[in-house]
Image (cartoon, rainbow, N blue to C red):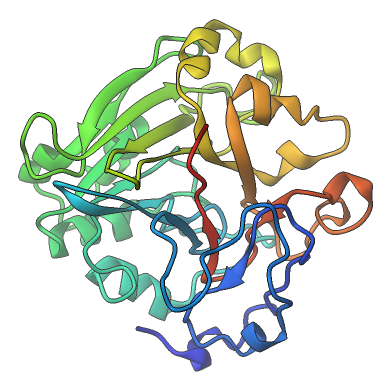
Length: 320
């Protein structure tokens, strides 16, 4: 596990204590953890030494680690968009120690059951690091859009046998979601229930119209520990994109939607998250180093959490 020295160059981790979801630092040795106010939220993390059963932990940028469930498969650990090559001058650059920990499976990224990649842009995806990760972790499963798989096939170290552990997704915008089991022990009813659909990339149709941006809705079962999360990559927030999927989205409520930060922007109806996507709570990801004011200040930011550093933790609420 990497220590504080590896993270010293990153901006200080801060959140608003009034955020609806209780955001706390995980045990990453961040000096700023002691500066955080106790969570005062409608969704409180469990008190005492007992950690919340279902949690989402920030990696960096749009990267999130989830740990959910407690059944025949035990708790399942998934990573969403965990590795990327490009920061484009506005995002945090991944420290080498963080990359090495994820690729090798060092704590806290040990025992990962599966990795999800939303799309093949360099600020969400690294073909070389993911290929290396698949080689070094022979049990690991990967779910990616076909465009990402094509890039991985060109990498040094690639071999065709890696594809036996990769679920490649080819969908059109508005097409019915693709459902599959993922991250289990090989039995037909093991692992998480994954429902993947393509949602237009932000800026569509003028920008990135050809990019296959995949939203993953992931549900883990378990007595007293069932949970559902949704990760949207760089999805566009226009409600009309999801109209064809309204029955599908209304059929299962997500406890936590991990949305790109512009879903909280001015002029965006919060109903896109709570009603259209059918999510009980949300956290904004892909937040730039210079945090937009609307995430921190004013009436619009009330009740909305965001991730902006390494090791920030949210409890994933049970849906109702």
